[in-house]
Each structure stands twice: as C-alpha cells, then as structure tokens.
Length: 140
Length: 289
Image 1 (cartoon, each protein chain N blue to C red):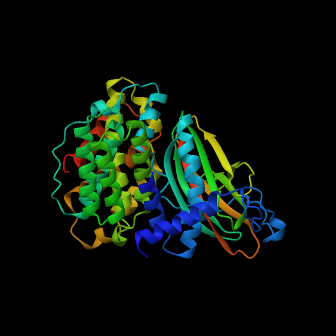
Image 2 (tube, rainbow over the protein chains, first blue to last red; image 1 turned 45 degrees about the vertical axis):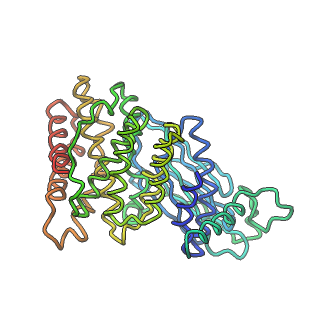
Image 3 (cartoon, chains in turn cyan, green; image 1 turned 90 degrees about the horizontal axis):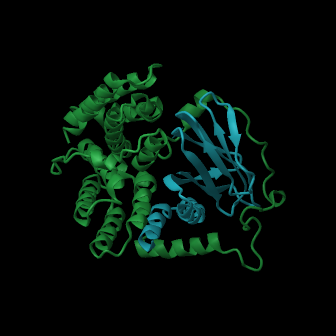
C-alpha cells in the first residue's frame, strides 16, 4: 500500500493544518483496513481541521439491512472528540462511544434513512487551537 | 513541495501518529485518553441542533452516496441475490468526448462497473476498466498522483501481483476516499458528477434486478433516496453548467434526476411500472455516454 499512502499524504500535506489531518487519517486508515478482515468495507474516509468547540457535519444515507460502523481519529492536539448521529430534524439519535479522541458509532437501520454525522472538537490539548480529525463510514 | 518531500513528511507524520511507546509523550499525545485538564476546558456535549443550519452546513460529497458494492449488499439484504455484475450490458462508450461533464459521468459509470465486477472479471476486462478510468481522470485534470496510482495498479494486475480481494479494497478506497478529495482543477462539479454516474448505473441495475425477481418493492429502500438525488441536481444545475450550452448528457441527466426525485418522494412503493420508468430514465443517460 505504499503508493496509496503516498497519494493520501500528498493530498493531505499541503499545509500545516493538512499535515495534522494526515496524522488523523493515518491513524484511521489502519483501523479501516483492519476492518476488512471482519467483513467491513469502506464507503468513505475523509479528514478536516476543527477548532476548539467547533463541529463538522456530514450527510449520510443508510441502507436498510446493513450494519454501519463510523470510526474517527483525532490528531494528538485534540483531547476530546465527540461523534453524534442526528436525524434530519436536528434531534440527537445516538452518541458515539466516549473514547477520548477516537470515538465510534455502530448503526443499523430497518429502512432507508438519511442522517447527519457530526464531529465535535469538545476539548483540545494544551496550547492547541485546532487539530486534524478523520472520519470513516464503513458497512457490512 | 515535491512528492518525495511529501512522502518523507508523511512518514514522519505516520510515526508521530502511530508510535505509542515513546517514554515521555507530550501532553495530549496519548491515543484516546489525553487529559483535557491540561488543555482547553471541555465544551458541553452537543444537544439538538437547528435542522436548517445542519442542512446548509453539511458536507455531502463524502458520506452521502452509497458505493455500488454497498448497493449490491443492500439488494441481497432485501432478499434478492441477483449479482448486479451479470446485468451490466456491453456499452460502446465514446472515450474521445472531451466535455468535462460527460467525462465525469462516464467515468463514474466505469467505476461502478469495475467495482461490481472486480472479483469476477478477466484480467483483460479489468485492465480495460482501469484504462478507461485513467483516461477519464486525465481528461478531468485529476492530477499526476492519481495517474501514478492507477499505473501502479495496472502494473500489478498485469503481473498478477495482487489478489482480487486486495484489489477491491484498494478500488473501494480510490472510489470512496481518494476521488472525493481530488480538486479536479477547481471544478466542483466533477466529483458529484462522477458519483452520479456510478449511482445512475447502480440504480439501473437494481431496478432491472428487482423487476426480474418479481419483487419491485424491494427496491424502495435502495432507490428512494431524495437526499442523494437532490445533491446531484444541485450540481447538475449550478456552476459552469449555467454559463454554457448544456451538454446532451448533462441535460438528459437533469431530466432523469427530476423523474427519480418524484419517484423517491412518492409515498407509494415502487411497482413494475415505476421500475420501468427508473430503467428508462437511467438508460436515457447511459445510452448517451
């Protein structure tokens, strides 16, 4: 996977903020690739930079009968990262497991439905104003 | 910064992100349990949010559109075990067409075909798909990195140096993670149109499979996706497309998407007649490629 690593890093390392995102993405890619052994496949993986207390949301559509596993990784500058699932009315449907900077969500649905996955940089490490975070949506 | 420098920096980033046995990590450098007391004060957990603001600010290009392989799985979950790959027709697509919108939609169709057939196709078929995607990426200004990545895959397929299971993972990643990150020379329509091509092909195959199986309502949970259709319509009808004569493919794509949106928003289940409509409006676009 050397070529893929290089491509991802080339895409991600064009600024200090993006370099921080690369750290988060590197952490997450390992988990995503390991998941294939358990039947998980990737729908998407992406990264962004969050300032303290800020959020980033992603619209996601889930198929009925499938199981979804949403994984995250925060770069070392983030201390508490939350991941939440919202319905299209803005109501919290599910909160991710509390795991410092690597929370996850496991979802399944009996009908086709659209939701928002929201990342929230709830606390940063000392002297850190922003940090990279990565999100992957996998299914099986 | 050249690719070698980027790669070196990336390796340093990787070491920084993955090493957990350093004797004295700086504050916040321990995965999962960094002490917030030494950093910023933790904000309160989020509660309910304004749906209008959520809708406006949400990113749609990454997680919204299911992959063709995921669509195959959803079909099986709905009780239909037809392999979509067996329904893919031979299409004589025009790979010399230089219209960016057309190239994007066509490339999306080829990506869907490749993902659905990667485990069963011959090396020759797979290499043809990869070559067509490479041509598409070049026409779309995808950049030299994706070009090199595809070259690497092509060489490994030619040398039979990669298993099909491993290849599916890599191609999943190209489709779901790498292509959405590419800038395509600043043309923000390209990624949605590639995704639209893949989704349109998947919808056509699902409609045909569910109709043939005599279970039209099984397609409800797969094809009735108004948010997905809205996302495609948003990009088909904005940006550069407003300032130029619409390409035949884009024009047909818009009318097909509007029909699919009507079906998706209808409270009624899909029946044979509605599936015929899906097949027809998707085929109208695919036939132009």
